[in-house]
Length: 220
Image (cartoon, rainbow, N blue to C red; front, side):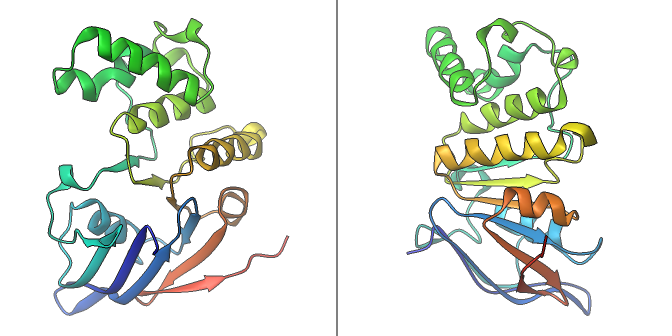
């Protein structure tokens, strides 16, 4: 059984069908890249999966359960935005702990979990009290990943995860991100406009066009 199975998904704005009976399956541990021009519906598809948008019809099944009309907090999904969504006034520790703090977890539990997550994303403890504005692009990405992991997600969704990384280190940071996701064995969807990023990160690449997904191969 696939971890994510989208079947016949339709989302329209007025007479325009942005998603037109779209189908997608993602297996356990698989990383899928979604490509396409601006405005074709990549963000709409992510929003439907996350629960920010309600589809007009079709199903979004996670582990066999249709969540298309289930509350956002019940879906157990982790979203990492293009700018990572980190709070610049908070330390690395407080950024990672933010969700747990909001849920009023005990301080000892939070501290232990933050240490575990820091180790998982392969960041040194020395940066724990550092401001995120003092981190490299790759380090900020890992902090955002650690914060996302705090909800114990069933699926990752990344929006242009390498766009904020310097071109000189982009391929290296992408390879490191892929290795961490693979180590976690959590399936992921990566939205990107860059064929090189898609090739670096993904196992399978699709192009969204005319409301449907087409599997593509990108030659080196």
